[in-house]
Length: 136
Image 1 (cartoon, rainbow, N blue to C red):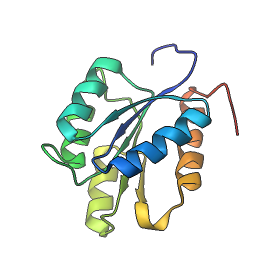
Image 2 (cartoon, rainbow, N blue to C red):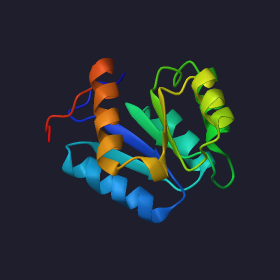
Image 3 (cartoon, rainbow, N blue to C red):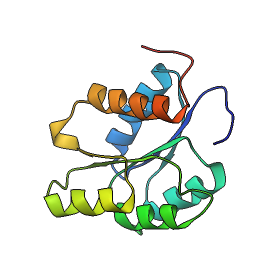
Image 4 (tube, rainbow, N blue to C red):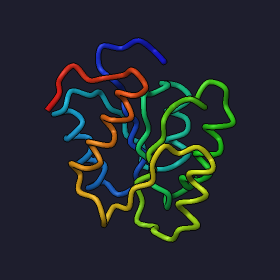
């Protein structure tokens, strides 16, 4: 983990509205963030910037979230980055596969409020030793 003043969160999400909403929440809660609109861009940013946590959708252009997760966990530089899958795919097989590949959580977009996603994100960051300076 890189020592930063504020935790860096990478949002890999192709739906602009969702990406912007979480970016704003992260900013208000004292986090730095990066966004990627497709899986390939997200993987590249993760490898270059080594964020403290990744929020990742499953269904995306160019490279899907499961492929990203596989690649992240196979890379010595990125394998310890916590990944929260945030998807509308709710079939148990997707959840099981993501968790087996190393995701720390799998949240269904339509079943969780953004505040619940932020609470889970904060719990994971606190457990990993990366906490924001601002706690709301």
